[in-house]
Length: 476
Image 1 (cartoon, helix red, strand yellow):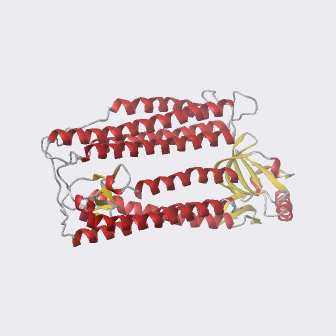
Image 2 (tube, rainbow, N blue to C red):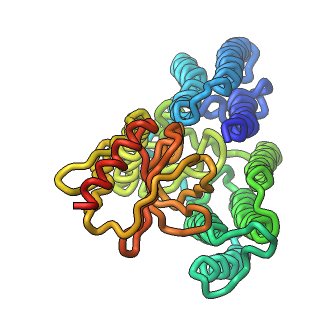
Image 3 (cartoon, rainbow, N blue to C red):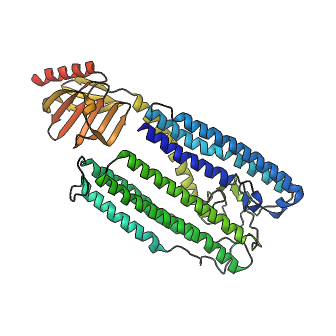
């Protein structure tokens, strides 16, 4: 599994970093509507100012390029980390901070361009929002049915997977070697991607209802400009929904007839690659729209002072929640809006929660399993007492060898570094409670009324000692 993670990180992270670099640090700055989140004004293109802008752009682009190369080197080095859990934690932390580092030159460029504006005596219109009353709220490009159709198809396949998981219908196990665990995989993955499809709907609606931008004194120009931008976003949302639906169908077909981990992983990589290609096409189309309407722009709504570092919008006099982004594509939130403030707080708490969870996962995977007999009970402990079994209620008790021969498929819980703790499908039997360290060459198979346990200590000696104690208590 380790090599699959390495491939995934190389294929996914590296292209995303390249996209950030080429989109946010363009060499041809004269063609862009914004430079590092600052409105690209005609004064910047005057000969005496253009040289300074060129110097700032080159400096920021160079710094970003250095971060990019260092990022590639770090990703490659992380692939050599042997411990799977440590690797995943390192990658997770790296991704978060690396994206921040990639925007440091962007922040520097934003600050320096604002200094040049002040030196030139260019005043930004802080807390001012322009509205074209003729076309206000009248432009929409999203056909709701185009989003609903792929969602209906995804729902049908999810229900089929769910019914298979519940045992009502049989769609998995069409070839020899398949087992009931496939139903869990199909239902879980289909449910996740259906949920993503459903989340796209409100996001697409918000983008379609975002307030129109005013670039001209001609209302027809404003109408056509905003319709083109909204149509571009609507097409991306529809494409995203269809990609999710196609992934559900392909994934279920593969699991039904050829449940191969490498094949499923390859399909997932294709899925992520398709989304990146779609994003690139969206950004290229957006830049083309800006270029087409640049010559028709007669009103420059300079709101640079409302953008913190060119990335975070804060305008208490603007009642909009969603605002067109200046960095990248799509929309962002107005942090001065009551809902925007709440979202900002929740986002900070989520980020903190993720880091706390990463620390917790790192600790628990490094905490050894402990098995003991105490007061007539078998106690399995890791961080806490996970299982407490009354010895007198044990119906069957067998000490077995070679736990590596067990086929363990996780339903939920932990499985890494030879440690398995949670509910698993074991050799096709569902809902087995597993508390094992596979470094022990033996394990205890315990059956109670309605429950099956697979338990071992950290070593074969510890496992054998616990088994003997259970037998002593059991025979009393």
